[in-house]
Length: 243
Ligand SMILES: NC(=O)c1ccc[n+]([C@@H]2O[C@H](COP(=O)([O-])OP(=O)(O)OC[C@H]3O[C@@H](n4cnc5c(N)ncnc54)[C@H](OP(=O)(O)O)[C@@H]3O)[C@@H](O)[C@H]2O)c1
Picture (cartoon, protein in one colour):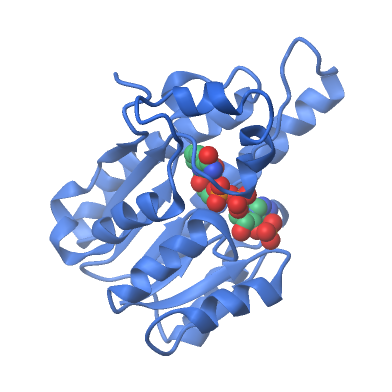
């Protein structure tokens, strides 16, 4: 199977690229700003035929990303929407112009980008294809300091469920994972701050997740055994939030 993983130059995306390559997929390692890091990830993947592809989801480049992937891999069977941004914009301390810009940018990268990628990917997909999105626990638990992020991830989950129904007749399965805190660049400063201990305590395991713990679930969703999981959102949060 030929897989595109967005935001795979580091963090959860790089771990997903590894888990898919371990399972025999040929992977397109997508990056936005760091070609050398993406190349390093691609070169270290097990197997052969892996490539890198470039594009900015905040600049309407989803079509270019899919086209480049199809050209380089010869087709597309698995899309993993992993790329995402997170930054604080609490309503109490954010001015209106910054508030509007925060919502626009977050929705553009975290929700409209994946929607566009899905539309273009589906044009190349056949029976047995997979679309998997990396959502977030924040869609359920709330993101008081980053409300646009929580809303975008809730939208990503809802889109997953709707498209699971509309794409099933074409044999395409659509699912998502909703991680709690994961040890990546996105949250390193936070985990190293005085708040770090409180964050780790959110889980009774008293730690945050590792990228590989998210990647293994994504690799399973991408496998042929997971067709019946279409429409699922798998909660991966170390029992930190039950609902
Ligand atoms: N870490 C967590 O605690 C956590 C928890 C729940 C969900 N998640 C979700 O998991 C996914 C991966 O997170 P992570 O922690 O691995 O993040 P990360 O380390 O910050 O990596 C984010 C990735 O997304 C790419 N990206 C950012 N903006 C982009 C844009 N405009 N266009 C295309 N690509 C862009 C980045 O590329 P560049 O390096 O080139 O910018 C990078 O490869 C995200 O969707 C995130 O919301 C993370």
